[in-house]
Length: 167
Image 1 (cartoon, one colour):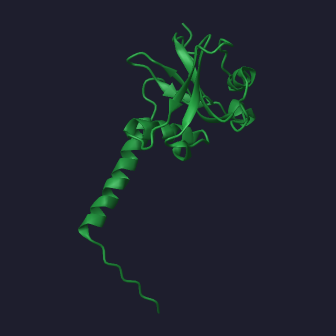
Image 2 (cartoon, rainbow, N blue to C red; image 1 turned 90 degrees about the vertical axis):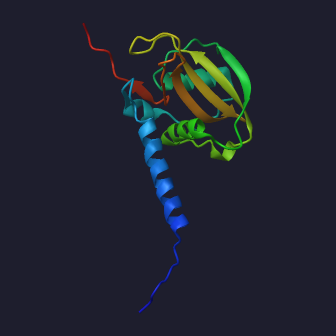
Image 3 (spheres, rainbow, N blue to C red; image 1 turned 180 degrees about the vertical axis):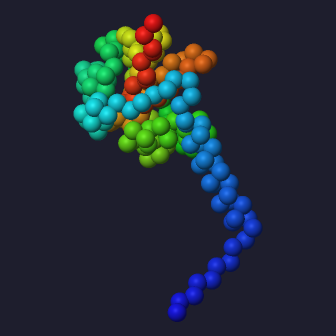
């Protein structure tokens, strides 16, 4: 018979409980509230987020393959620095990226190029919605669809919002 013994301190138990609590709260914070989204399985099945994105045409083609119609010229293109350590907002954003099969953790402290494209139409009617692609060395490392208003939203590029009801 094999017997294992472990000395567990109150600090270790409290730290474990805090980690579990933080994970639960993080998951709850990511739950869609304002704009209900559903996965687009047909679009997601055809989209390869690992494709190289060295040209503007390749970036626009990726967005179109996800079902988004965008202005073919980026609204902005700028170099950004990914933080060396993530705060709560960045951890929540990275959780969204992990759902899409990407992870920003290996790129902490690195530079990347952020391409922002204006969507020509959004299924629920909002205007000013943008598609953001974060690219490092020709590889997509993060992507989202977002609205910058105070009550805005952010979701993955492979997700499509529910259609508004017909009136």
